[in-house]
Image 1 (cartoon, one colour):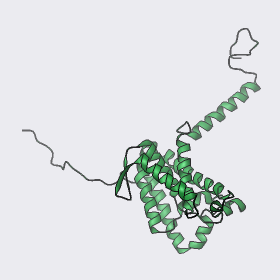
Image 2 (cartoon, rainbow, N blue to C red):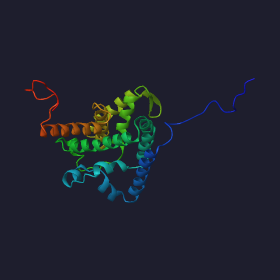
Image 3 (cartoon, one colour):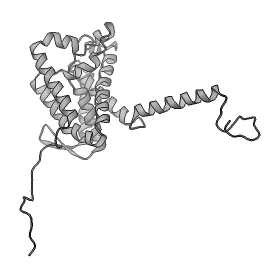
Image 4 (tube, rainbow, N blue to C red):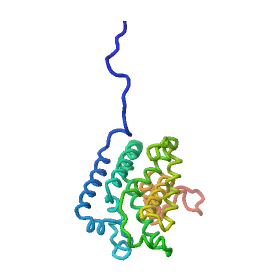
Length: 248
């Protein structure tokens, strides 16, 4: 009679799996900065939050990145960090840590840049952003949501933890909400940044290469090689007036 090992055949798991080292650092820095901001709310937000006026007039360009690590309240940081773990963990396993971190910061900083440009528009609902402090990792989080929907379009996401919606539909809904809110007088200042994260994330992933920095490096090396060829009178295929065209 065959013998079977004594172990349970069923198990229960929650979420996308364990937290990686990169996610631990990101979450840890966000939590630490949240605690610091609770002790010195005015000073920290004015210095490290995204204030488009300070970026334009004082060239406080660091705010394009530091605003991502500040949050306005307990629920704000709780939901952002939960989303970072739920969607970021699986994307990091798929991409690798280096590309994941690059995408996270490109979408977060890119969303901030678009927000600054939006605040310079002559419309009233845009100008109200010019002197407003903007904080939160939501720009990068929306970029992760967009990436998740592109890679796993039919995965169910529970909207408001109740209604299961395919990821691709979920992103369309939140994108439409962010777009409408950013164009209305009643829209919160973060909605433009949310929309910016979606736009930058899409352009980054659909830009024709999975490694844009590698593509730029390749283009630069090609340009440099062509300059060297011209300097030493070297042409691929030889000169046009040669009867036997070869590489010289």
